[in-house]
Length: 96
Image 1 (tube, rainbow, N blue to C red):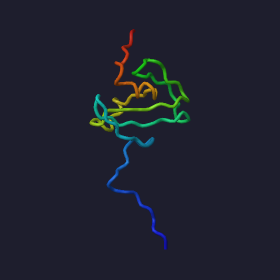
Image 2 (tube, one colour; image 1 turned 30 degrees about the horizontal axis):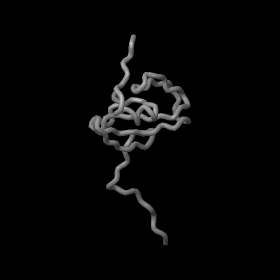
Image 3 (cartoon, rainbow, N blue to C red; image 1 turned 180 degrees about the vertical axis):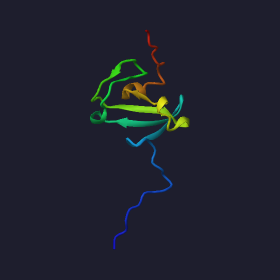
């Protein structure tokens, strides 16, 4: 009889109930990052990297500090390019 593949208990699944997330470390700290495919992006968001809209249907990433895991208020939606370049430029400041 073939053996069943079982989930590894020493590698817990990170992320929200909406999908998988991965840990990332950088000079700006430790983060949990989740990729959002364009088909699942259904709302408008504001990217903190460039201060432009992320429109529905546009693939992007959601990131939040790893030490504050699970806090929805600290999650930010970023364009993929802005997330990658976040350490090379400062976040934009919104002008009201």
